[in-house]
Length: 327
Image (cartoon, rainbow, N blue to C red; front, side, top):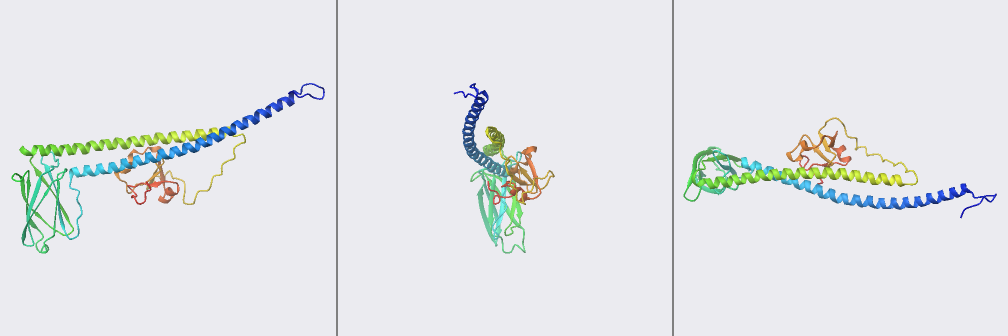
C-alpha cells in the first residue's frame, strides 16, 4: 500500500526506497542461495577432479612401467643381459644369432665340453625366445696357474643335427661373467627357427610403438584435464565472488616456509614439470623420464631439491628412485 506524506499526497520517494530495500533483500537472499549451491558444486568438482587425477596418474605410471619393460626387451634383442653371478661361480652368457640378420634363434640346444678340476665337464642349455643361453660353473681351483681353459661348444637343431661347432678359450673367474655370440648360418632346417626369432623381434618392436602411443595419449589427456579443471574452478569461484553482496575480503596469503623459495629462471640441475608436479634430476636422467616430451611452458627450474619438494613437487621414480617417489 502506498504511503502518504503530510499533505495527503503519495510519498513516491519513500515508496521507491521501500521497494528498493525489498528488491535488494530478495536479491541478497537469491545470491546467498546461489553462493551456497556454487560452494557445494565447487567441493564436488574438486572431489571428482581428485579421482580423475588419481586415475590418470596411475595410467601414466603404468605406461612408464610398460615402457621400461619394452626397453628391457629391446635390449635383449641385441645382447644377453646377464651381468652378475654368485661370488663363488663363473658364468658364461651367450646368444645364438643368424649370421646375416643377427636375429636371435630360439629353441636350440647349446652344449659345452671343457675340463675343470682335471675332469671333463659336459653341460647343455636351451636358447630362450631371444636366442640367449647361460651356463655357470665352479671355477677350477688351479685357475691361478692355468687361467685359460679350452672348451668346445656346439649348437644343435635336434639330438642328432649339429648346426654349429667351435672351439674357444675361456677364463673362468669366480664372480665373473663372460659373454659370447655364436653366429649360425640359418639354412635348411633352421629357416623355421629364424622365422620364430623374427616374430619375437617384430612383437617387441610392435609393443614398443603401442606403449609409446599409450604414454603420449595419457600425457595429452592429462594436459586437457588439467586445463579444463583449472578453467572450471576459476569460473565457479569468479561467479561466487560476483554474487557476493558484500565486497570480498582480500585473501590472506600465508607466508611460505623458508625452504619454499620461488622457482628460478636459470637452468639448473633440478627441473620440475608444472603440469605433472614432478621433479627430475638432470644429472641422472633416464629414458622413461621423457624430458624431451615436456612442453617448454611446463618447465620450472629449482636451485635445490628441497625447494622443489617444499613447492609441492614429487620426485620422479626413475631419476630419483622409487624410494623417494610417492607415485
